Image 1 (tube, rainbow, N blue to C red):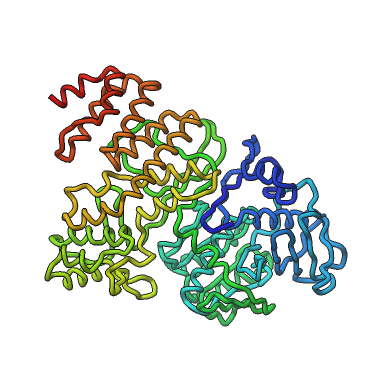
Image 2 (cartoon, rainbow, N blue to C red):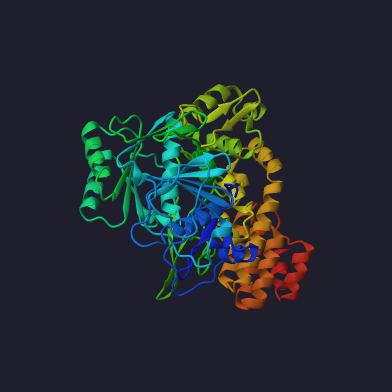
Length: 584
């Protein structure tokens, strides 16, 4: 699956999620859209690769089907239709299920399983909470059991790659269906690390706080605790973490960035993402690259896309929520709403332009500088030198200096305002609601469609590029670039309304249409759609909406004159007098 396609997986009854990999296309489709059941487990899962997770879960279920403790896994290699297993210690007898000796590996230590071997009855695997993907080897996922390190796991090498790999491992731990007993503690990680299942993620400002938390957990363990540090811990803290990681009970696993002399496993990663695990000398490509695309999108689960029960113009926008369905409660479906961690720099243009950045900016220059930042975020080539000169004149060099000071530098020390011979653009780590809208509205996975579109519309706060906010040169440049966006926005609104109507959610229909009109208040086609909807389902609101329509048409100072199609509709609905009153 591509990184931009996310699947939400709910596990029903005792059936293994994803066994349908082996059961043919029809079963696979049914698994992706499982029927709700009384035994749905809490939590909805967002996964990097749903097919690989399904196959891995099925294979681990086979491995744990025997009596007693399951065999100790060192490495799993998961391909499209088969799994290769390497045990920490050779097995004295045949493995449970249909695992077969792998002819390409050591006797008793290397085993294989194909999808054709999977039996028809599956259950969620248990006993493997620390089995996690760390990379790719050719066309296969590489998984290891972190508990088999029997001590600290150090990840060393290129600084940026190290943090991204640790973040990816944390992501896998909280999304793997067989790791549902795992809780992750992130120590000293930057705020922009975003993980699903936030109830299973803890953050600490210092390694010492994480150590204290882990020691408390170890006294009364429940499941698995993974402590992940963004730097090499100080010697006293590292020694305490080492003792926890080396405890035979295996309740705590520890991963540290940097060189840790006491580490039992060492993962070295290069700038290009090539990595090696020692021991056993396993080479692979870091999984961080496969997760890079997920950082640009909101992580959405299949199904529900809750919207306000009623539209209120002054109600706060949902922002960038991640909806997690938690199952059935006493009053119906229960959901937990979690906001993404704030980005260091955010630019919001779907409404009044807002720029949040760490540096200082003179108050008298802030409005015009915010306009230029918005243009840099939206225009395909950024702010051209010609546009900058037209706005700033002789003060153009000063404007560039102020923008650099306001936006600052990214994690690699590079300026967030990127200059070239053609103009100025923004670095990829600047979060822009315009781009988020495109990412969400442009997704293709049907099972997340309503959630994606609802969240896209939730980013809207007001009118798009209102005339009063912009200098004429900037507004002119933005208008030329927004025609395609307006068309996409209207399609998004109409489709979100269609999906809400299909679900019998009348409030959701009106909410979607109103969101469309919030951004484009003089788009008469959307007003007509809203009036037609209300005339059939909420006729008592038609008169009020007709008045709002005329007020919106004249809000930019132009005559409040509806077009012919709108005038005919108003007359047919019995509100032609409102039009006539507005246009003497």
